[in-house]
Every structure is written in structure tokens, then in C-alpha cells.
Image (spheres, rainbow, N blue to C red):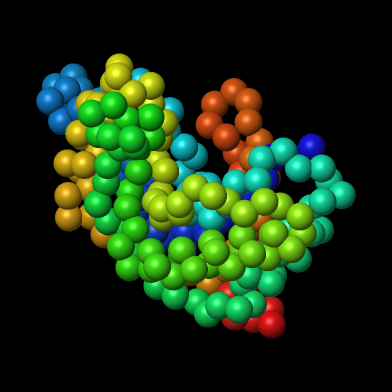
Length: 203
């Protein structure tokens, strides 16, 4: 069984910008090093995702048998081939289900949110042709940055993220879908790309 999902990856420069934002959240401006040196990292009790694997999830499929992977690959090519590249802008931050009791910390999507929703719908339709059920939960485009317990240090982390993200904005051209395998274990999950399909080029 392979734990898989389909997503739109971030551009390299945008990943770097988001990583810088997260680093600011993890620093305590009031805690200076010896002799007024660099700021110290604050061990917030939240689980940050790996910055090298940032993505916008379109559909999480969970554990899938190896012999069903080709059908998923065919579905992402079908979904990608009927759409064109588009611009995505991320800005704004918050917590889910609320910043007061967050289980996840995220950055929001403004430009490109509707295009992502249409792409997710095409992907659902293509997957349904291969035997997967239609996703019934409403699609909400967002970039997950961390997971929290909701009541311990999650609210503090959410406040600091929203403050650090005030005025933050990053854009890139979404040009492909990627099928990832999620490897879990000690530390943050690692995401391995298994296949990809370029938007508008697989018709």
C-alpha cells in the first residue's frame, strides 16, 4: 500500500519565501542571545511541515494498492490536460477550525482559488472514472504550514503566524499536477513525487 495524494507544488522561490516567514514565526523577538546576539528559536509545540515539500493538496487518496497507481496517473493527466496554467497568490494566515483552537496553521489562497477549485473538480471527475468516490467535502484552497493540538501552544503560534504574515504575499504560475507518496515516521512527513502532468499539455 502506498499513501498518496495529488497536489499543486509551490515554485522554488515561493517555498523560500514561505520558509523565511516560518522562521520569523519560530523566533522570539524578545529573547536575544548572549551579548545581544541573534534571536533564539522558540520551541513552539506545533509540528511544522517540511519546507521542501510545500504544496496545495487537491485530493488525498490515502493508502492505495500499487496496481491502482497507474489509474491515478491517468486521472491526473486527464485533469491537467483540460486546463491551462494559472497564477496563484498566497496571502493571509489563520488556523483551522479557528485561530483560538487551531489543529492546523495555514496560509490562504486569494488569486487562483477558483481555478484550483475547478482543477480539483476535474480531478475528482477523472478519479471517479477509475472507481474512486467523489470527494464530498467542500474544497478550500490553503497551504498547510503546521499542525497543533488546538489548545496548548497552537493559539500562540496562530497569533504569531498571523502577525508575521501581515503584508506577506507570494505568487507563482501553477503549471502542473503532481502525484506524491507520503512517507511518515519520525519527524515531519516526507513527500516523494511519483508522477506529474503539465497543465494544458496532455490533451
